[in-house]
Length: 520
Image (cartoon, rainbow, N blue to C red; front, side):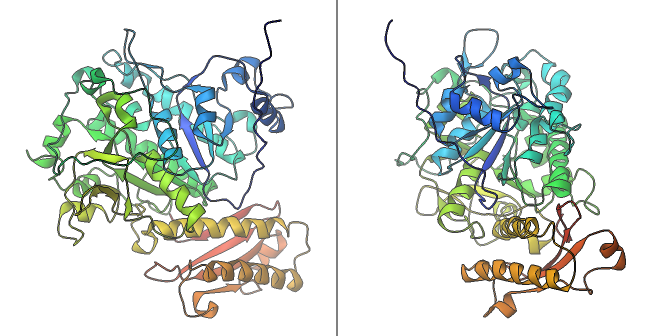
C-alpha cells in the first residue's frame, strides 16, 4: 500500500431556473487524462446519461463527448479538460484552445458557473491547405446540431443540449471564428500600430495566469476569415439565432466578430487600415447585420445576439496563436458578474478592463458619435482605449435592427422576465382554466414585474406606468380556450428603452411557455 489519495468532492449544484448568469460554452477541447471525478459521474447519473433510454456509450461518458458538465471554477474546468494542449501543427508545439481561453476569461472576469459541452478534440491550428474548408460542415454540425429534437435527449449534441439546460442564459461558441477561418498557411500576420502608449495594468482576479509567454506564438497568425469565411460564420450565427428565437427566447448568444484577412481588410477599407474603415458598413453590406424577416432566415441582426470586437491582448492570452484573445469570454464574464452584483438589466458599458493592455486592431474612440467606431458601437460591443488611459468596454448592445431592443440591458431584462414568467406558468399547469386562474396569473405576473420595477429595471414613476398585465377573455380566443392555452398580455417599459414593449405569454396544455411579440 503506497498511501492514500484524497479526492475533493464538489458539492452538487442544483439547477436554478431564476439565475441569469450561467453560461454554456459549446466547442472543441481535449479531455484531460484520468478518471472522472465522482461528482461528475453523479451529475451525469442524475441527468440519466449513464442509464435509461438515452444513456450514452461508456467511451463517450469517460471522454465527456457531447455531454453537458457544470463547472463552478476555473480549477474545476482545468481538472477535466486539457485546454492548453491544442496542437499547433504536425510538430510538437502546443497552444491554448479557443474554448479554454474563453472559459478562463469568463471566470477571470467574475463568472461563477458554466456548463461545458465538449464536441470533440480541437484540430491543429496549422492545418493542411483546404482542410478547414473540407471539415467545416462536419464541425459545424457537431456544434449546431441540426437534428436535435427537444423531445428526444438521445439526439442532443452541441447547442441541442440547450433543450435540457433551462438554467443557462448565456451561450458562447468560441471555436466559430477559427472553424470558419482561412487556411493559416495563406494568412499573413498583420497587426495594427498601437494608438496609445503602453501602461502597467493590474492582474485580474480568478482564472489562470496561463503557461507563460511563448515568443514563438507571437509569430503564428491568429485565425482570420476571408469573405467566404465571414459568410460561413454569419450563417452559423444566424442558425443559432433562429434556434434561440424558436425554442430559447430567454437565452442570449455572445459571440466574437472574426479577425479579417489582409485581403478582406483592403477590399473593405479601400487601402486604409481596418481600424479606420467603416466596419459597420461592411457588416451591413455583407449581411452580417441583416434583419430577419418574420423571425426566419439566417440573419444575425437580433435581440438574441450580442457581438464583441476587437480581439484582445492580455497577459493570459500569450499562449494563443498571435497572442490574441477573442472577446466573447470577456463579454460573458462581464455580463455574468453584472447580473450577480448589479442586476442583469443594467448596462455594462464603461466597465474598465485592467487585464487588457491592447487590442487588434486598436479602435479610435471619441464617445461623441462622430467616428466610424462610435457608429459601430451602436450595433456591436466595442472595446476601445479610454481617454485617461487603459481600456474599457465602451458599448453594451445587441445587434437588433429595432432600436427598442438594441440596449443590452433591455434584451437581458426581457430574458429575465420570461424566466420568471416560466416559474409562474409551471405553478398553473394542472389548474382549471377560468376567471379564478386568470386573476391568479395576473397577480403573480404583477408581483414579479413589481419586483423588477423596485430594483430599477423598469421605468415609470409608479408600477402603473412601468407595466400592465392582462389575462382575460380579451387576450384569449375560443380556440385558445378549447385547446387549453392560457394567454396573458404583458406591456412593460424597460428603464433604458425608447418605447414600451408588449409581448404575449402563452401557456400551452403541456405547460410550455411561449411568447409572441416584436422580438426577433
